[in-house]
Amino acid sequence: MGNFLFKKFIKNYEDVKNPEVRDSYGKLAGIVGIISNLLLCAMKMLVGFISGSIAIVADAVNNLADASSSIITLIGFKLASLPEDEEHPYGHARIEYIAGMVVSLIIIVVGVELGKSSFDKILHPEPLEFSIYIIIVLLLAICIKIWQALFNVSAGKRINSVTLMATGADSRNDVIATAAVLISIIAGHIFNVHIDGYIGVLVALFIIWSGISLVRETISPLLGEAPDPELVKEIENITLSYDGVIGIHDLVVHNYGPGKIFASIHIEVDSSVDVMISHDLVDNIERRLQHDLNIFVTAHMDPVNLSDPNRVPVSHILDDAISGLDGVLNYHDLRIVPGQTHTNIIFDVVLSPDCKISHDKITDIICSKIKEYNPAFFCVINYDTSYIKKSPEEVRKK
Image (cartoon, rainbow, N blue to C red; front, side, top):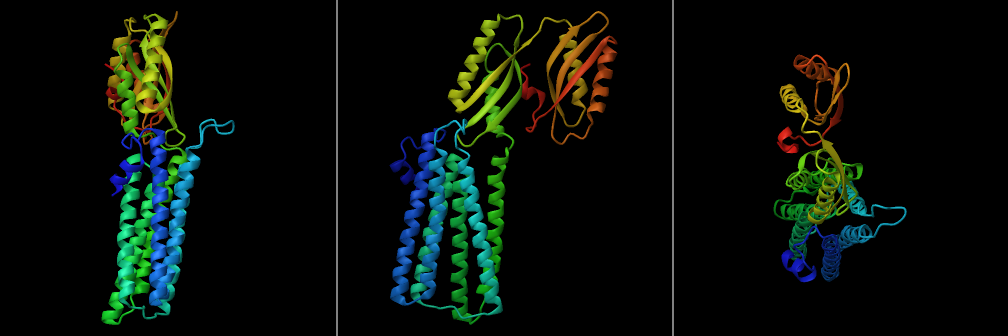
């Protein structure tokens, strides 16, 4: 059913990297959620009034509240698609993350309220109303909510949306809560036991836990998280596929929301090649990355002197020095600057976030090996931290 709706109402539904297609997924999910919750509410209201069941009428009102998550989703995607303006030069795409956080907070509130009412039922147990109407309505509600959860999660996975995943989790929690009520009603009718309060507390704890987990997921991109390793790998593979590129480093990725990713990268080229040729190469790479990955890239060209006779032996020394240091990933920007009394060996060393070795110790180890090769060589080291673990082979073209 989900695929049918995607194909029916979303043009080029498989092109999920297209911002317009992505926006269509969010709007469709919001509209489907509102309509299905309103239909479920109307159905429960009708059956509730016919059967005289207060429980069904109360559950119908709850479905109106459930529609709020879908309304927030719809509004969130609508606002996130607004174009750039003077106050927001990078667009409004992060509003989608905020919408996801609001839905997550609603889930936590629902869990807390369910916990309070369930605890009250433990202290003051009451027999639950049993009728065939209630059983049928609850079973139908569970089926519809299962479909809602699957639909939202499917759409969320397709476009990598935390908001739709949160909405799907909200529907899943409704399934669990309704199933708990159904079990309590049947158990109370058959065995004359009142377990709804205890089951409700367990369900409430699960809902609160899921809400907190979703809040963490939505806060992370708002604060600024490490880039997706797959995206980094794609950037590296495309850049290093060009003849004339010696290596890359200092890749920085800024996520301003879905479809609004900006990156900067340093591209190493042979210093003996005409600067206009190298500049054209870098321009072509920038355009290719924007076209293929839908990211805005600014590339810095770093000339590398490959003709220096000391470059190869010094590179081997550095490779050997860092290979035995846990948490030291690689080096880049190697420059050999000769002087009258000594030669400066200038380069950057890249560390993992969990590197336990101090900068001073790393410097002593590397510099001692360089001194063994040539006492007149002095190290000038700058330290960087990479938040994606990579081996030197992954970022350098040998």
